[in-house]
Each structure stands twice: as structure tokens, then as C-alpha cells.
Length: 249
Ligand SMILES: *[C@@H]1O[C@H](CO)[C@@H](O)[C@H](O)[C@H]1NC(C)=O
Ligand SMILES: *[C@@H]1O[C@H](CO)[C@@H](O)[C@H](O)[C@H]1NC(C)=O
Ligand SMILES: *[C@@H]1O[C@H](CO)[C@@H](O)[C@H](O)[C@H]1NC(C)=O
Ligand SMILES: *[C@@H]1O[C@H](CO)[C@@H](O)[C@H](O)[C@H]1NC(C)=O
Image 1 (cartoon, rainbow, N blue to C red):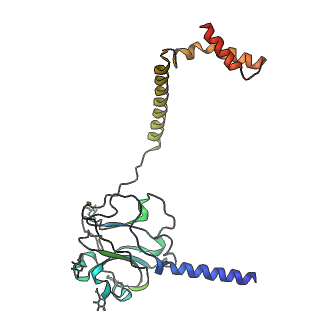
Image 2 (tube, rainbow, N blue to C red; image 1 turned 45 degrees about the horizontal axis):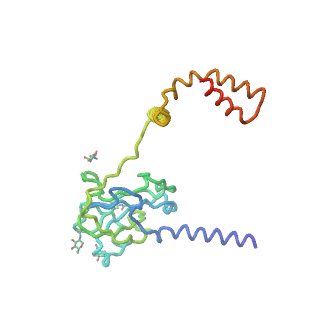
Image 3 (tube, rainbow, N blue to C red; image 1 turned 135 degrees about the vertical axis):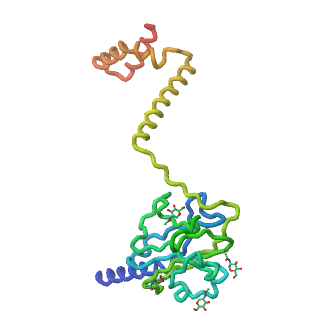
């Protein structure tokens, strides 16, 4: 009985795993990036953990003019990678060739490695370059190719309409600071906070003795306080000593 349940679980897990690619919908990143949708490109989420059953096959992102979608048979038309410089002729192109094994399995917020930029090569000087787009609207799809034969495909993305008001993608690099700089900044912040606290105290009490002079004058007081603690421990001793100190002044 247990064996049967286990077997069923294993089969169900396998079925779910292999169903991942056909059910995946490419989508524009939800991360708050300035260039996620501009007048010449957009930024997609990199699919997580769905291509690992195709470790040595090529995964391509295909961008298609939405108008030609009805004439498009994905396994027939998209099996042979096409360059973006031929977009006029084909109305679709392949970019971001990646082996299935190279897709990430853990997303980290703000990690630009987990994003796919579309239209980000302002200079098209490589094969399958990522040429800036114009007009549209477009749809995106992932295809898995083995020797230029499509063996799996995702779903189509929603309609992607460029944003004519926004300039090309500007993806800021996550700020990198050296450990030394962080330590210096922390120390400076603490010193500044202490200084500020003293300043506020001075302003509040109108006494110049706070922070500097009193800490020197306090030395006998601390000694007295410790003696009292030792011989006559009670929780009011600090208050008593403090009062005495004030009287002494
Ligand atoms: C897709 O392929 C079919 C068959 O080869 C062809 O008739 C059709 O024009 C192609 N569609 C596009 C958009 O290239
Ligand atoms: C796949 O198609 C590309 C052209 O897009 C070609 O350069 C390449 O040689 C083809 N690969 C195979 C294995 O047929
Ligand atoms: C292509 O052009 C970009 C931008 O000018 C440059 O950074 C890059 O090194 C060039 N790549 C090649 C392969 O020439
Ligand atoms: C998409 O196709 C339509 C109809 O063929 C065409 O009018 C439009 O210019 C195309 N869009 C792009 C970006 O080429």
C-alpha cells in the first residue's frame, strides 16, 4: 500500500516537472526596474527551474511580431534560429541561446543575472545580437531546440507593447562597496549619532557639562556607586548616589 502511494507520488512529481515548460508563460519582470519596458526593449523574468530536464539542449527566447502569430506553427517555424537583423523578413527572431542546465533555480531579488533583457544591444556586432525593437506589439516564447528541432516550447507571453515615453533599458549594477568602506561608514555614522545626541542633550538642558566635563568629574561618583553596590545592594542606590552628586555640586 505504502509502496503504491510512493510510486504515485513519484509519478505525479515527474508529470508536474515535465509539464513545467509547456505551462510556462514568459512575463515582464515585476521587479521595479527603470528599463523594464521602454521604447526599444523590455526585461523578462528568467524562468526558474523549468529547463533542467533538457540540460544539454539549447533554450532560445523568440520574439515575434504579434501580427504574424496566426501564420506561425512554432515547431515548424521556430526550429531554426533566425537573427534579429532578419526581423523585417521573418517577423520573428531568436536571442539568448542558453543551455537548459544554465538556467537558475533560485531567484534573488534585484539579481540582474535572473533577468533577460530584450532589445539591449545598441551596437549589433555579434551573431544573434539583441537588436533594439521598434513599434510592435510583440509576443515572446521559449523554445527548446535539439539539432534545430523544437522539442519543447513554453506558452506565449501576453501582448507586449513598447512604452514610447521611456528611453532604452538602464539596468543599474547592484552597488558594490568594499568592506573597508562599509566599516568606515558605520564608524562615522556612530560617531555622528553620539555627537548629535550630545548636541541635543546640551540644547535640552542648557548645560555645557554634558558629555565632556561630566565624564571626567564622574570618576569619584562611579567609585562611590560601586562601593555602595557592594556593601548595601538595593536597586535605589543609583538614584541615591545621583542625588548626592547633585547636592555635592
Ligand atoms: C511558417 O511556416 C510555414 C510553413 O513552412 C509557412 O507557410 C509560413 O509562412 C511560416 N510563417 C512565418 C510567419 O514565417
Ligand atoms: C541550426 O541553424 C543554424 C542557423 O540558424 C545553423 O547555423 C546551424 O548550423 C544549424 N544547426 C544544426 C545542428 O543543424
Ligand atoms: C560590440 O560592441 C560593444 C559596444 O560598442 C562592445 O562593448 C563589445 O565589446 C563589442 N563586441 C564585439 C564582439 O566586438
Ligand atoms: C508587424 O506586422 C504588421 C503586419 O504585417 C506590420 O504592419 C508591422 O509593421 C509589423 N511590426 C513590426 C515591428 O515590424
